[in-house]
Structure formats: C-alpha cells, structure tokens
Length: 411
Image (cartoon, rainbow, N blue to C red; front, side, top):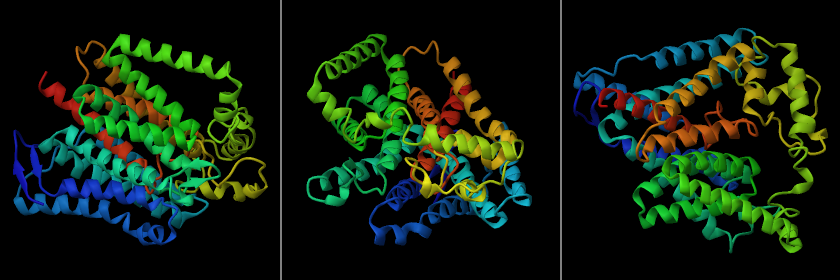
C-alpha cells in the first residue's frame, strides 16, 4: 500500500486502497443477504476490511516516515463521542455488548477518516465515492437479474434482490441515489444512466417508503442545485403522476393497495407510529439524560417488558428510528452530541454552496446527508456499523468535509 506525496503534507497517493474500499463496501452489502451460507461466511469477515484499511494506512505511513494529516476539530468531536460511547458501558444494561459495538465505531472512524481520507487526498473525492457506487451497481445488477428466475428475490411480494430485507436494499439505494444523480447530471455517460436506472428500479420495487422518501428529498436538492427548471419540471411530473394514479382505479389497486405503497399501514407506519415509537418514548423516559448504554437498542423492548412478537404490525427488536434509538442508548446528551454536528455540517455546507455557479460533487454529497437524515426517521441504522448503509454514508460525510476543506484551501 505505497504512499507517495502529491501536492502537500496530506497529499498521499495510496495504492491498493481503492480495492479495500470497494471490497469493504461490497462485503457489507453482501453480508445482509438472504443466502444463509454467504451471510454466515461474511458475518465476521465484514470487519476485516476496516481493520486492514486502518492498520495498513498507519503501518505504511510509519514505514515511509511521512506524517499523517493534522488533527482537525471534527476529530476531537468524534473522539470525544467515542469515549462517551465506551464510558456508557459503566451503566449499560449489557456492558460487554456496549464495549464491542463501541469498538466497531473506532474501526470505522480510523478506516474512513484517516485511511480513506488519505485516498481522497491522493485521488480525489469522486474516485472514492465511485468505488462505493460500483459495489452498489453490482449488488443491484445481480439482484435484478435474479428477479425473473429466483423466487427468493422477493419477500411477500416486495423485491429484495440479494438482501434479506427489502428495506435494506431500499434504504441503501435511497441514501446513495442523490450522489448517483449528481454524477449523471455532471457527466452524462451511458454507465451513469444504467446505474441510476438500476438504483431507481430497485428502490421502487422494494416498496421501501422510507427509502423512497429519502431519495426524493435528497434528489430534489440535487436537482435544485443543478437546474431550477429541471427541478420544477420534475415536481410537475410527480404531481401529474399522483393525479393520474388517484384518478385511475386500476392503478390505485396496483400501486397503493399492493405491497409497494401499502396504504393500509401508512397511517401507522407499519407499527412504528402506533407501537414501537410510543414504547421507545416510554423507555427513554426511564433514563433520559444518559440512556441505557451504546449498542443496546435491540435489548430494550424486552428489558422493559415489551414482547416484540406481540406487536400487531411492528417487526423486529429495533425501534426503527435512529433519533429515538440513539437517545434510548446514549440519552439526550449523546444524541444531541451525535446529530448536532451532522446538522451543523449540512447547514454550513449548504450555506457555503448557495451561490455556486455549477453542479459539483459536494452537492451530491449534501444530498446524501439530506437523504440519510430523512431515512433516520424510519430506520435504526446510522450508528450500526455492520449494516450495508453506514459505511457508504460515513464515507460520504468524510468526503463532504474533505471537499469543503479543499475548497477553502483553493478558492
């Protein structure tokens, strides 16, 4: 993993890091498969990519005698929050589990904000995000090819491709759709059309309402930054489609009453609004300031006498809301310290790009952050590093910080 200088102290050209980023993203995506043999094989291997990225980076820097990048304010905030996550084991309902899951945060922090940062410094932010999009293209492509021939590609009528849960694929495609759209609008290459088409088709077929909403909001931001007329045209087209569906009974039956929009559960959010979130608020009320320990979300229902199997609609042991989920784990203190900087980053970056004259990668990355924060209302995922969405998201956050920092250095 050779390092070579390129334009300054932080400008490293990191060989073979591109393979590690691609494989790490692909393994995390494939680990959520419904294929039992593959999932069992990748269950422990998925952490290896983070270890190799971080360890290899610092070993290579030490061997070359070069300096690592300087510590920045976001490093201090992240390390402070990591320390808080570890200290929550002192009062956690499952201390060992808290330490284990907090350790995964450290692995991702080092891999993304140090090793992948060096790769972005040497090769650019676009190449780094392209590696994740290539992994997603492979997952979506194989899943769509299996759709006509494999019964397992669907779950209760909803498309899941290679993944175990349709919402996993929907959330992954929905969060990353804005940056794929930005790349298409900026480059207009055939491969970009194919990727965006596969992502959009997979997203719609999953029927993931949270993923679709996240993609719409994040992509609307990208369209607004690209062309005002294109944004307005897209809004008018969506309104026309909504009116068309509302006025056509056959389409209502096909798109609203079937597994895609599932109108009968919209009001309850598939049990989120009616069952899981009220229980979550009650649980938070027991320990509002510091929570129950990081990484314990899937234990809290049963810890307070709620039987997840007894819920009428809600499925699973998670709260299906990242804001409530993190508050239940780390209290109001930890949740505000976690989401506050992300909201500040979004507001600060959008403010700085208000008068940009042309579409840029940072607008796509801002769209990813917007989509992710919307998706946090419907799923518990942003702090769970073993899922398929967390690594692409935190890589995007790092690249947005990196892109803004480079713009400050070279206005």
